Length: 427
Image 1 (cartoon, rainbow, N blue to C red):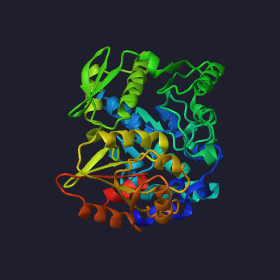
Image 2: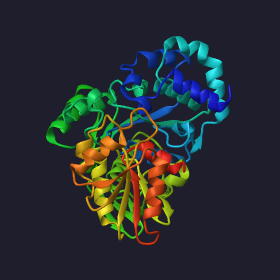
Image 3: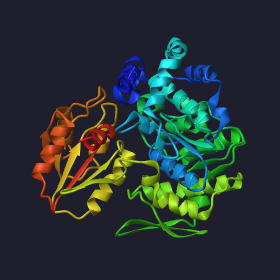
């Protein structure tokens, strides 16, 4: 098969959760464990760091990978979803897995994995771990796909677990309350393995983490306390961070949630140093300053055009959109234009209630089964005082916004879903 044919096979035979929703979700670790056995347990051949949470886990994963790479380690990075190319999910030292490897993996092993009937994510994870082992990766940063306790990636035995924060998302699978969601996320905490909690949340959420960690004798570290020295300030180029042991430093990631992510990453680095990792201070500074260049991270408050100034961000739930809305209100512009679409399994009203009412909206839908119909979205938005027109495709919406916006004085924002951003980036 060719590479496009291989991707079509993967998407059609093992549909992707992000594209079609709950029908593609397979609960439990049974398939992952069977696949792991088929490939002779490749994850035992490298160290790993496990990163979960509601929001920020992609940014934290890429920052840790960039820092470890700058420190001289050969680093695997497994994340999801991808935006433009499937191979974004699997990288070694910032380089995507070759197309030839993906094709060869399917051709060589499908007679073994097809009887297992794995999900897209389960098979992708197996491919990643085998590739990391064959590439002699020293440490892999592994992002949780969904939840934690029953996520495919939870077969690993990491050196460190990281949980960024807890917000309401995937409530049909993870639970309706924050403590219920926290209990699922806390499932990645392992016996006697240190864990970082980026944002403790309310008392009930903190209690979930504390009880889980205590039951497993896992050293628990809340980043807000362990790195109480950490401060962040905004300036003309983004964030300027201050922390004991480092000179003032900047990050290439400028979203308003990135101060919390930075504190989480610094806490993780402190614990990795305690475990014997060799991470010079300079590697941390360069990792933050060049994370986009080093890892290829996209879609985090990313400027994609200057005429008009166009920014995209993959925030897709209320916890993440709150930061986006606050940041939009701080930006200079004469008029604000927003291309917006969401998945149909999100808490749409809660998100819409946070968005700026003075903007002109271009409601649209991504080309996936999970996308919320743009007309339904516009009707719901109208109830929140958000006004705009509907467009059947993302290109239609983006082109309309670009034609309407003043190229020098207006701001165009694109978001609501990773798939909206992906289609905008591909234009």
